[in-house]
Image 1 (cartoon, one colour):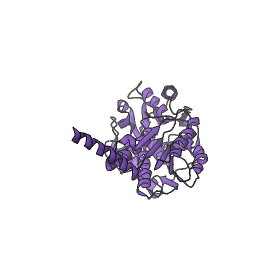
Image 2 (cartoon, rainbow, N blue to C red):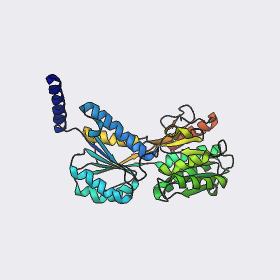
Image 3 (cartoon, rainbow, N blue to C red):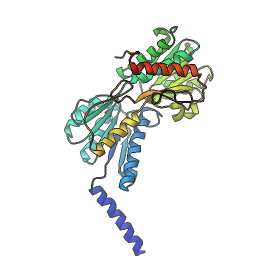
Image 4 (cartoon, one colour):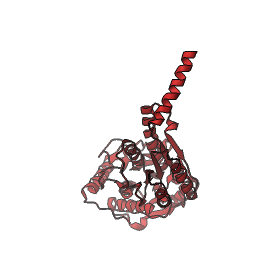
Length: 350
């Protein structure tokens, strides 16, 4: 018994010593849509969780002693959470998910000059912030190509979370991709609706049904948790109405809708979060703007999941979709991706 007690005490002491030697800690502040969107926010969580599990194993401590996260309910919550994490001085890095955290971070970060921050999807021009941005228009263009080739009505749709520059770039890319793939589609044939929120799948479904009933037979969702409503709407007329996911293969993350999701844009938020955390831990982190995309220094981070086999990895990769996509469509998508890479296709964006 005494031997067991001694061992337990040594374990506690070991953990204490390990923390004294600087076990890394990760703070994650999600965007207002919260977990459960099976896309953007969830990817940010997965990236941080992956880093946390690796670090916890390395230092021999529980994951929850390495990783803390919060789910703000509104933009008004951001400042309090950013300051709450920063004022402790305990976090190796604080990751802020979402474009609307950047303006708040520009006010908060200067008050904690020794704290490393990361913001995803926007730029915060502060010396202790790494700003990660993506060429969203690239994944959207490729999704537009699929929609343009798949549609039978030659009318397609996009559901955005909010009418903001970030989402308008998705709309622009998708529209250009559909028109590039199918000359019969004109700009007015791409219907657009904005939910006005990232966490309202009920309204997302209503707006999707409105577009389907107006003639669109393929809708691309770029609305966080809200565009789960697009998938639900498509399920009301399977085999006629189709959906395209965003940021992650949503036929995988929302498998109950794999019968109507024909493709998904890819945006490796998880990779960006994981990479920035590990750079901070390893001492290679630097503030500034980091761009992910096909046409970027990274040469990765955006693409599409479509079909059953990798066509041009890592840009055109297999999806978990249950829908049989013809080889000629996959070949055309790969052609589009190659065009983006070599500059023969230039996507206009704001």
